[in-house]
Amino acid sequence: MRIVTGKHLSRRTVLRGVSAALALPLLDAMTPALAAPAKAGAAPTRLSFVYVPNGIIQQEWLPSATGANFELKRLLKPLAAYRKDFFILGGLCDNNGNALGDGPGDHARAGASYLTGVHCKKTAGADIQGGISVDQIAAQALSAQTRLPSIELGCEDSRTVGNCDSGYSCAYTNSISWRSPNIPMPPEMNPRLVFERLFGNIDRSVDPATRARRAQYRKSILDLVQEDTRGLVSTLGTSDRRKIDEYLTAVREIEARIQGAEKDNREIDPGIEKPAGVPIAFRDYLTLMYDLQVLAFQSDLTRVTSLMVGREGSLRVYPEIGVPDSHHPLTHHRNQPEWIEKVKKINELHTELFGYFLGKLKATPDGDGSLLDHSMIVYGSGLADGNAHTHEGLPVLLAGHGGGLRPGRYVKYAEGTPMTNLYLSLLDRMGVKPETLGDSTGKLEHLTDL
Image 1: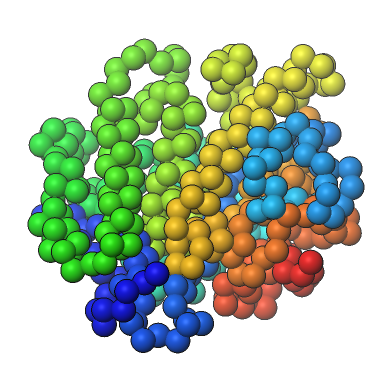
Image 2: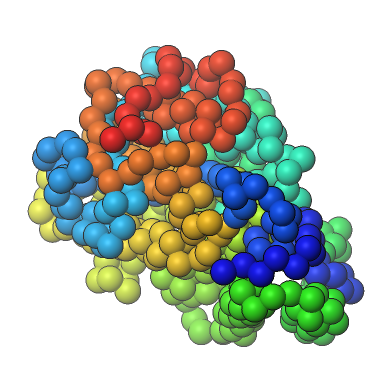
């Protein structure tokens, strides 16, 4: 029960301190005391894209039958607790990931066209050319409503120059987000820098050594804003005090995990450089990136995110699950059962950790529901079969109830339906209404009906 006090906080209220500004989650006090019931607890819709590289083993992904009673095959079983919170969408394709006369380079084209629906120019030089991605269309339309239009995250090297795939620029394999046809949005891979972008000021003009020296004296952001916090909490009701306490506890835990990673000097695999703030264990790394997204949504710092679990063509190894071999070569398994099994283990780990993300969103209160109730999250890959480099029948999972989505079903569309039709539909649910996006031909049906 919300006590009507007449006090009304702005949704953009922040706690301020020296070199820090901490946004707040949605509180009861941010709803006008005499607001109409239909408006009380209103929360914005968030849009998120989670990209996994090198395709997914389709035989262990796609259900056999459509509808609400779809079976959870091996790669979806880690998400069993959330089956009513996501769709599996079949039949969607990314035709512009195909060669179309340009020869080899499917990994680069898969990454570049995944969110744009545009066939990228084959070049390893500075004259890269692709399209504007769906996340950036949303970010530009909603930029006035949040401090950050969007955040782009990644868990692997994101250099944008050089030749990374058969004459294609590394910008194509390492970025799925594009601000314009020739400006990629390279993902930030260091959790410390993500945290500081969200919650504290950072001077990127100084050299790394100076930043590292300053970091030794850096206080917790919660220490920096503690005076402002005490003043605000004293004016809030019981429910809001609890929300503030839970939120600040989450911020403190993430700070501690980042600081722990910075102090971790254990030896890591040769050839993989560990930037400060990056956990050594992949599981810790990815869950930290997911937690940062949850905080960004909870505090309404942004409503648009993208995360590359790995760059397209990823060579990451996964010894923690018994797969010391590089991911990409394994996907060219030539139907060898032992190689296929290793790829399945990698796919399974990725979906398990995505389940962690869904769980955190579902457990985080937001307005009249949870963050998952107010989010639309696309999970998938720009390749279907990594062995054959196919771009048809992509593995697509759409999670959340935001924008009026009614998940809990496997929906199969006509073969060859552009992936961009899904994106056009999601933009529409956010109130962003471009006429077309890349190779789109219209909006998808059956996302908001039962």
